[in-house]
Length: 516
Image (cartoon, rainbow, N blue to C red; front, side):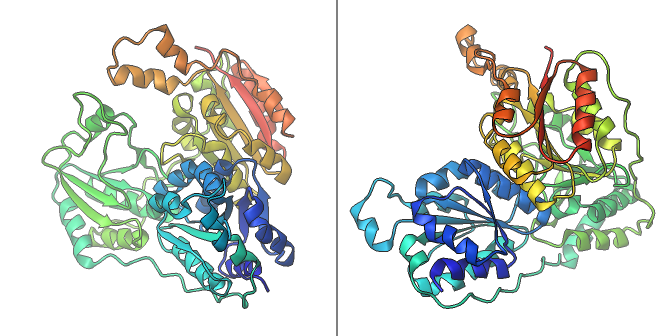
């Protein structure tokens, strides 16, 4: 058994049986070994940023990591934007990065680079294996690191000769540590703050945003009079009919400040103190109001459900005291096709169990509001802010959950970063409806241009945000990659197209040409 075979067998035994890849010469022994380990599912991606973004979406929905296979330093750097997003979402991921053979690196061939130096800033675990005999054990440790709560980025650098060299058998999987139990002092501190009668907010993220955690959080909020909120961008939020209601923190800093005005106690459950997404002249970055005490009930790796249950007990919160969302889908829209019409149409036709991969940016902001009363579904956000995640994230989510319909809510500018994901969706016949919100601009940047107070912005500056010259044609692009596609220019047309798309298996794309 060579090193690559021992590596793949160890990964499969450790619960990693999907690999999103764009391989090169240094990874050929890994590729060849796939035929000897049929339990590993390889998924070919045409760009490394698609591979890492798909691994992100897979990890969010499978609750276990996928691995990526990347080609040396350049392949890794192509993937890093979406590795950054995954790290911010605390998603488990194991990146296997091929490298030159150990003795070859001294010659500084064209693809030679400092792979470890490139990987280090975004890796919780980083190791280069120098001997084939050590590869299986290193892989087991990397898999353990990726699966350590709340989810980590592990990087294993794999020189080519370590892949082809003789190795022993696979290593046994290592036990995954349980989430840490919160000590009683933190529970009592949060309970004391919530009993005070002063204005309080419970801000949640991570594990707390699954159905059980939401219900407990709602019980605690209702028993204490606190307000229950989640971060603006969350890795995975279970929402819709039958789920406990939670408010979403606004995006703009001044709106956050308004929502938190007068709050005296902020209880964090898997979250952190709110800060502005960017710095703006004359505006604060730290958004916790003056005089507000911050109470950390649970950190991201803690057992948030247990902590919330104990807090509910401490407050004697009634078992039936949660506020539950009722089923209330809106009527399909008519008239012009704008952000409101898109949101209403998606909410009207969203099937039960849908997964929304949201990178809708400025034109998608109304969809989560209108879909609150849709059938139960999962909402995945771009937590790291590096655009180009939506289509790959939807791709990975569909691999993880083949029987559920995935809806990619994607801005046209963001889609162009990783449009190659459509090809993978067609190749794998994935159940993804890609909704491209075509406003022909980087509209969010027009907004930010005003907000930062940049002076002298005229036609040349604004042309940097214009995507209409030449005009993008997503229907043609999608069809060229094997994805059925059509274009909608009014609300009725979009609503009908979306209803058809969610009812049919396989991938599809709707280019929604928006007014305004």
